[in-house]
Image (cartoon, rainbow, N blue to C red):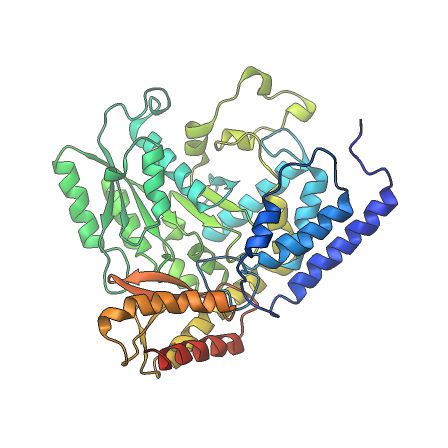
Length: 474
């Protein structure tokens, strides 16, 4: 029984109308609220049981347009400043549709989708200067990319027995800063190393890893009989956008024979901008780099990447297939398979939306959009500094402004809750969607500018809203 439409022309008419709806949604993304809460009535409707009889495409599209589309996260709106969410592009919609039409399994075999992914990987290996032996893999996001980096580092430290005997009782320890991402902790837990084996190194006044403290911790662990095996530096920390001193950390890793990994979830792509590229000095020295294309490259979620300087480490950690998947002739050929480079055999065509985006826009335009986000952050910070009720909590090193409302009408011990409430109010009112973080133990308003649609006018609207909230504080 075929599941194709009974009337292809009718289906095409509906599909074209649906595409128009989606493109209009993006075109008018600046109109209306950034985010709106999902009403209880909508939640009830969405919690329906599975239909036994199909409802038909018209009904499904109508439900989507009324129950789902209006209640998105909001990250395509130019005043979405929360976390680090890419804004997407209209071309990404077409790329996702094209990938769905091909329905390729990108675990392996010899077909066009695999070649596109290899091309995309090569583009970024070249961008970061990783050398002729480099390779990589597209994954769901940097959380998975960091997990794979830790696995490769562990296997290199232990040797071939890592995959058969695990950690073999060895006391392996790794290092990242206190600003390093929490997914690194999860990676250590999942791989059986344990979160206690990940040392959190203090940072300096610019929120960069203190490299003297790093070396002291490494020596202390060695003297105690433990085995330091990797350092995970950060290029663009979540809280403030700080870059660790990559060249110094690389030199330490070489001196002590440690794997040098860089979590560059969004900051690594600063290399696309000539004005920002100096921040990424030392990326070319990394053994592995993790970053996301669904952030500052603006491809649709999800698309992360793990790159490795020497791909033999990737194969050693993840290679191996059962007999029914051994490389053969024709479609069964195409060595090297992506399945040999990571955990997944069933993989979607993630590379196509990256390929579309880069080919349409080019690295220069993407880099210029990144630089503009960073310019807006500095512009906003400069204006906020003139406001007596707004206090900047960290240097603006990239595209993130961490500030704190400090209304004189409130006691200082009320400022934490006031700032948390202010962010919630901005989100629920639909005016803007910043997030919160803690700097020095204090609750801050975190304004992360990732959207290529954001303008100075949007930043002024946010500044006016913050000023008004502080002025009305009681």
